[in-house]
Length: 545
Image (cartoon, rainbow, N blue to C red):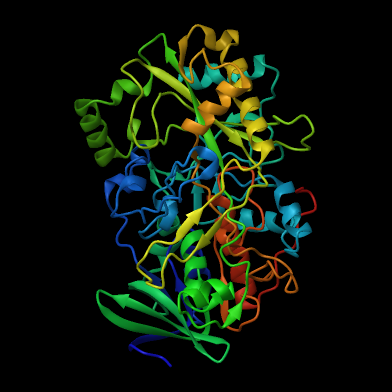
């Protein structure tokens, strides 16, 4: 039974205007043949804290823009609760993330296909990455040059970026001109979702340019459940303030609400582990134990060094300098505010048996945490380093049947012996790079973890105390074969066992990709749009992989 006032009807109802939802809104409405309704709980993204790239630490720590989720106490991290930010705003997490564009390794997607995601190998997804990209100065045979997503390649002009690159080479690593191209492995420029000095989110790239389409509408409200007629999804119920309203779907409902909220909505709508739903008094439509399982993420630690010269970003971190930088950016979209300052990437193998890179570097010419805190008054710089793959798996569950309640989130971080071994290798490798001649003139001693941290036990204690999420959660509605009891969606992102319902966002990843996940999330939406519309899939590229 459908309760609540029906305020609209559309062919496709998309829940979430985020990294995937904005892509779908554009592609599904493009021909004019279909009506599309987008439901988003968050508000406008027009504030400077979102649009200014250098202000990236602010929106992910603001209740206005972030759902504010945290993990449950993590048993292998001494009971610490780690932040799990997700965007609550137009553009979703693409509006509050670190503005880093990393495709992942082609072998990541080969592993997707091997796990049951048919048609999602490296060669199959390559054309969809190209379709979304607009990259200047890249190899047009493998990179896109005409897509909506503007991608900037930084010049790495800061002397500390240059020195870090040179030190990596001195330590025996290669350079790569494009870690999203033919060679991921090595050190090179970290591509940014920045255009003309401002954040280029999916809201800016995909949604706002087409808001004038008569067949596309955006509604605000908190989605509470999918509505059913038998086993077919026919709409979405949502709260607008305290008013219960309904958008009816003539063809499909598509959940693009994030790795946490898409799984949560499925469970609120009666799809999930039967015992869990019954315990909360939720009528069970389909008993699918995989909903909310398979949660994955990247962890990272910061190795911080004091700098011998006052050339780091710290010189801008005072009220006067911030004010001047903000004014320059507001007036011209240039200056220190126009970059995320993560301009150097590295992909390396810390496990000698790995057949492709299994750890990622971000370099920053400052010593500062994601929340904006600084360890001390000295100038410093840091490398973020963490393993790219883990077999640890967590879960998302309903904490209550109240749609407004945050979900239960536990990543089960560091639950595998191999994860501890990888982090020890990451710490020691970073120290080796930092000790090379090219960085020696800039180095005035280690801030964190400190030179007294040497043994395996010392490093483990540092990791347990200081490791942080890289904010790349995925996998809770895993894509797989329809006969796989742990899969939630099939290879066309259709929820298994029902009709008229799909999930399209990072929750469908079978395995986490090697790097930041915003790019593969957009790719998933691009490819899913063809499946939804019944279009022939783009031809696979045999050269990619």
